[in-house]
Image (cartoon, rainbow, N blue to C red):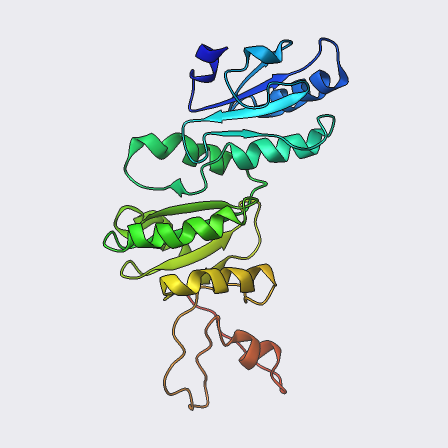
Length: 246
């Protein structure tokens, strides 16, 4: 068993009595997550190299973060075990950079479409201090995947969110669709308060928009995404809008 838990950077090991309900539940969870993780089980808890040497138990052996975590809930609760494994088998901060060591975790994160992503990009000169601050935020919100990378290596993502490359940004995005939530410019000290505001539903969805004209007093107004509601849908008179490709 000691060799098995070192066979990958994340290994899930369960200890159960043969034929138990807990083993059946563990098998269902393993079948659902097997594409992303390695699963093993034993009927002899003493074979576990460390952790909860008891039955039933579910243990995650990792080469990163806290190294080893054990499930503390009901071993018959399939959804709770699945959620525990998804959260704890993912690094607290998932790197999005040119280092190939983090590619597997990034790919796994984007394959789990039911987990909302928090993407943080910063210039390389700021990235380490940003990670230090972000680690505390991510540790308290493990139901989200926190992804962090340098702006210099993420041109595609910056274009997708409409972000500038010269400053820190924080974005929340659900792969299943729906609105994006974006904050830029942003100081490192503001990340936690902005994310707390998002959790409370106090952050408006992000809409890509041209800048509002400094002078929009002419009879024919220029409408942008940010002013469409004010000038069109909530106007007190009929409005004729011309849409055209630039």
